[in-house]
Image (tube, rainbow over all chains, first blue to last red; front, side):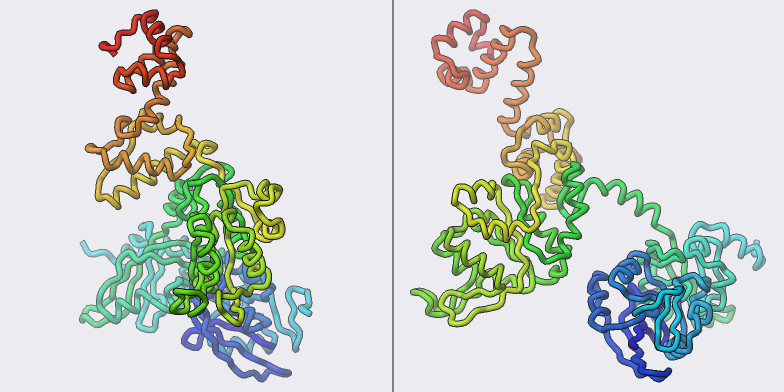
Length: 132
Length: 443
């Protein structure tokens, strides 16, 4: 499973729209993972989306993302967990352990605000729907 | 009178601008009421947290203003950025920063104020929304529909045919499509197929190799090569010879072409936008344009209306040209007089927007004041004026007399020339002048 996180100074970037680096946590079975690092292009959002498509991520965990960008991401089929903050390692560990990031790592004032999404033992669930 | 801390807090809560302060760890130490309203985050949720995770500005990561101020000891004033609020909306704001010191002059943190510009931006957008798209000015419904779909058209890579009379802005639309597309950072190359001699057109489009023909002393890349990864705009595509149409069709379909004298093919990674002021479908029926190429270039068709069908755009266009020529010619023309504008509204514009631009540019050169008056516009527009005055006269006899007087005025009293313009014999003119009591000397 490939989990993408825009990261700045080892924490989730505050705004996905202007983030410059994407870390990808590549996990196999269990909760072990290793990191890949990629640059994100500047310019129109479509360039950013294209890069994400190339990176073949399964889930995008990010901080604030503007509504228009979120619509684009959803339109391209990305599973997004937004309004998350904190240390990138801690966030990935919490996610792989099945915690709700919007409870444990919500941005200030954003607890339980975003889309409900949990990782359950190798399968991804979104509010009762299973991702194939 | 020194304010108590509680009074100071209440004062900060009264101001319309958002304000927050941070300590040296970039954690928020104060957050006023306006900051709560603009960001959607309550003071209790903000205090003690990292400012970037509360404020959520587009510059936090790459270009933080507070960091800059702390590093340089210079405030940032009215920098325009955007923040993402709780509802995911991008809120445009201007920010200003300052350093905070304690009583001993030590730096203890920073303060940032920010002003919500979303209302002002919304008003500006509303004012300009109907008026422009890139450099295309219009509030005509047909053009407005075009503005709506252009971004979508641009994002795909399909071939486009832009049709419309000469001077309607076909190249502007092609450029807008390029600027909105994923190819915007690559070249936009325009070719006027009617301006290049047929014998040179193939080498112009596809290039040639050294020695391909007498005089070919070096390799020359064609327009396809120059437009690589970008957009190739083929204006007046109807002027291409049938032979070249075949080669163009092959290049579009296979994405490969052969420069003259080359032994191998080259790849054509270009997006094609074509334009014509002719009826291509009619040309196909007449045998002047290949049907297969017509269907290839006409995947998406955009038709631009002539200016005479969108006269409501003339005031906007005149305004646009006035601003443009003011900056080009370093003048300060403020506008156009009502009767001059009225004159412009009555013309037919066979040359469309380009012709209107010429009228305004001419008037600019002649204008000595700060307003473009009627007298600075060409004679042919004044003829319309006279025609209209004639039509407003009472009887048929009055209209005839007015027409004769106007013709004599235009030709400086020369009866032969006036008669020719009126389409009557000179002797008929003499007779009518006598009937109406028209004295050449007086007129």
